Length: 295
Image (cartoon, rainbow, N blue to C red; front, top):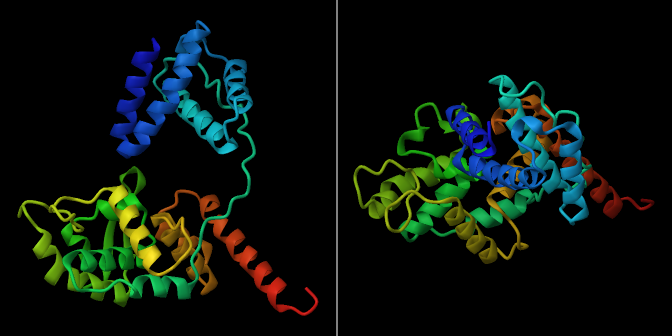
């Protein structure tokens, strides 16, 4: 099997298992770089050994790649060879025992409850786009949604009777999420007055529409959040994912347990959710340092 066939087969497998297009594209870029390097070494997929993967990772680090970047590329190689082992094209996974470089402990951006209130309540409800943005960001914070999950919502996703939102997350995994009253009110206003005005084609099923009546993109959500972040005079760099981080951190501060937060966020592993315990501990240290007379 050559590299072209191996990468194409792996991409088909990822698609069949419900991986998002953006994830598949990122894997394609990372594996394309590795296959190009391996080809220059005269290596086909079946020729690659543990030492080759380790040498490739070391070369990336020596070239100045960040630890997170190297770790991501090694994970892509590990995933490819996991698939090739599964379909019996190779005998073992050469990336399995290659350790990823240690990443720096970078805590996620989190807005305070007051900052979140300021951000959301700063958005007026005069125009269809403002109604949309208020509903979209209220819902994102109320449910801790990923950006991809926001744009993929369809019109009937929220059941107002049960007060639950049906979300399709990573790997096409569905989850039902409770929705707070402010988000429900904002969404009702948008559906009654905003979406109808934006709708150009009755066949369009997306919940949140652009000004031309089409489904929003991830960049649309990021751009609109940036606009309202500036209006609320918050620090730059607030991404849609910061609303998700804030959702999880505020739940933890309010007494929710990690398992519940894991379910709400749709994390496959509790270890992913544990980053919020570090955020909470960091906040406690900052509060202590600022408040205690002998800190």
